[in-house]
Each structure stands twice: as C-alpha cells, then as structure tokens.
Length: 249
Ligand SMILES: NC(=O)c1ccc[n+]([C@@H]2O[C@H](COP(=O)([O-])OP(=O)(O)OC[C@H]3O[C@@H](n4cnc5c(N)ncnc54)[C@H](O)[C@@H]3O)[C@@H](O)[C@H]2O)c1
Image 1 (cartoon, rainbow, N blue to C red):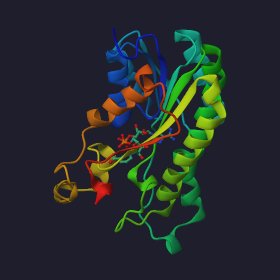
Image 2 (spheres, protein in one colour):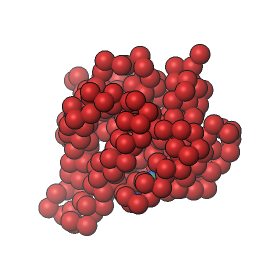
Image 3 (cartoon, protein in one colour):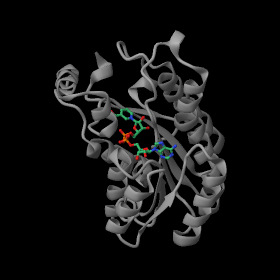
Image 4 (cartoon, protein in one colour):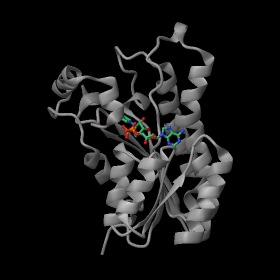
C-alpha cells in the first residue's frame, strides 16, 4: 500500500520544478492530486500524463476567490482535502533594501506569504470535515538565515513569515487533527535555480554545500511525502531544513 493511500492533496506551483516532482510522488504513493499553477499549459499536460487520479486547476495563489473554487472542485472530484503543499513561490528582484520598491516587496510577499495564509485558511474546513490533514509549507533556508551576497529582503521576509504562519496554525488546529510543518530547501536544481545561476554559478554552489552537490527535486519530495503521510503523525509546528548541510556551516 502507498504511503499516501486515500489522501486527497492540493499542490500549488506544481506545473514544474519541485511542485511537479511532489505531484508525481504523491500519485505514486496512492494519493489523488490537484495540480495547481498559473501556467495552465504545463499544468494541464502534467495532469493528462498522470491520469485520472490527477486534475489540474488554474490557481493564482494570491487570489482568495480562486482558492475557494479550487478547494470546492477538489472536494467534489476526489473528496475532502487531507493534504496541502503550499509550494508556489517566486524570488523577485535581487535588489538591496534601499532600492527595492514597495510594489515589488508586496508582490513577492503576496505570492510567498499571503498565499500560504489563504491556502491554509481555505483547506482547514475541508480538513476538519475529513477528520484531519497535513499542511506542508515550502519556505527556504532564506526563512532560517540571511543569505550573504544575494540581496532580497522581500524573499527573506516572506520565507521567515512562512515559519510563523506554520507554527501559529499548528497550535490553533492541532486538536482537530491538522498538522502544519515547514520545509526549508537550500540549492535545489529547478528553473528557479537555473534562472538565478549559470553553470559556473551552480558549480560554485555545489562546492559550497558540505554534501558536495546541489539538491534534486526528488530529495525534497521524499521529505514532503513523509510530512504529508501518517508516518509523521506526532510532528507539527516544526521546520525541516533540507540543504545538504549548508546552514550547518
Ligand atoms: N529551487 C530552489 O533552489 C529553492 C530553494 C529554496 C526554496 N525554494 C522554494 O521552493 C518552491 C518551489 O520552487 P521551484 O524551485 O520549484 O520553482 P519553479 O520556479 O521551478 O516553480 C515555481 C512554480 O510556481 C508557479 N507560480 C509562480 N507564481 C505563482 C502564482 N502566483 N500562483 C500559482 N503558481 C505560481 C510557477 O508558474 C512555477 O510553475 C518555491 O516556494 C521556492 O521559493 C526553491
């Protein structure tokens, strides 16, 4: 039996990168999965490839009305939602604080931070109906430490905020069977990383990681599956760093 047999999951930002890897693993472990993203073309193609236990809905995570529709559609199709992976995120402009506009700061926070609140808010009633559930919030090592050399106060602020949302909601809903944890990846090989670093940059990044390589999307899926599964039933309000030892330095 799969480790997520019978679970109904919504994964945001799942058309590519880590979100797509999580969708594949969740399906393989027996879950039904709603793939969501603003990239409808990629998202629909992935859902088609994964078969009838997968569905795609276009969801801009920063749009509250959109969330209500997606949660209702998922429940109608697969049953009450029992897992949510708040994965969608953007880096935003690598600009030092004094030069960063308020509009850019708010754009990054809307997608990385407010959206985590919105998704959490909208799945809680469904999870209560289902008797419980697991919310996995994807933050970053930028939600644990400041990263020297990559100026981005909006990203740092939003990813630190994800830890706060995680811990507060975990204690508010623990007795109703809802667990909430955050995941803090270091360098992981996705488009987000290759947009930010050229090949030389990736080599330098790999050499700086104590384990000697950057992460693969599957490394993170292993952790997310564990947190979504009943194997982690006594774990809530916790943060999980997955960075090959980078923040241990
Ligand atoms: N790649 C890394 O090295 C790394 C490290 C630490 C944390 N993270 C975090 O992991 C998560 C996934 O990152 P990734 O590397 O897979 O990125 P990615 O850029 O490969 O994929 C992100 C996905 O999010 C979608 N998205 C963007 N804005 C959206 C919105 N408003 N609504 C819905 N979907 C939206 C994009 O279309 C894309 O499909 C992000 O939260 C990111 O901050 C990534």
